[in-house]
Length: 310
Image (cartoon, rainbow, N blue to C red; front, side, top):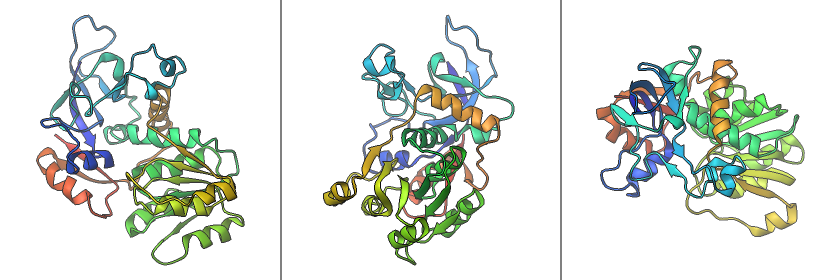
């Protein structure tokens, strides 16, 4: 299936893959996209030219232990768009994907929203994976796209209070408008002390949505005894004090991607207007400006989600 790309969002992983030299030579990045069907492959039925679509940016074998457990994102033979050499990404005029990867877009979901379904699914999985219970207190480190979608998903799942830690003023403002009870500026106060003051014993759950290395330790220190820290984003290394795990019996869990079902649920959340991108889409740029934007995003900035329009 050939998809004419309408928008493709820039993910933090795109920035790292490109600037760290991890991306194979000649490989096209970009996995957060939407568009319209331009060509239909031979033998494919049920689709029409011009239909609005997005795509789950990975394929799975459907046979391994994880696929049979409906944990497709852990498939032993997973192939990911813009990572697998035979699956170039969507920072292009068009992108080829399998028909099984496509998801129709309801009329209620705009093209701009559709290009953010993928990061929304990441956050939805993180909140569901954390086992949040109604009334739990939540602290989110980082108000980028993942953190802001996590904020909305936590609210949707019944979090009693949500606190966001973000040093950039514009991102902090958006977090406030999207429902954070309070946004804390880490450069101005003792974050751990303030979270403990606001929650009495510490937060029930902390979501790590930034790759700043020291934040993992701070997140572990900010949750209560037997609290949880969910690592949704992270740097390649971070310092951790093992005694915190032992003394406080903290549970630290990773959260990776999302299931097929969660991706579809994210589309439906947009359709139902339970999730919004209000204030989150910072800029829409032409494809030729992508190299400069990738460089700009490697430094601290107020941008939240930048979309590329071929």
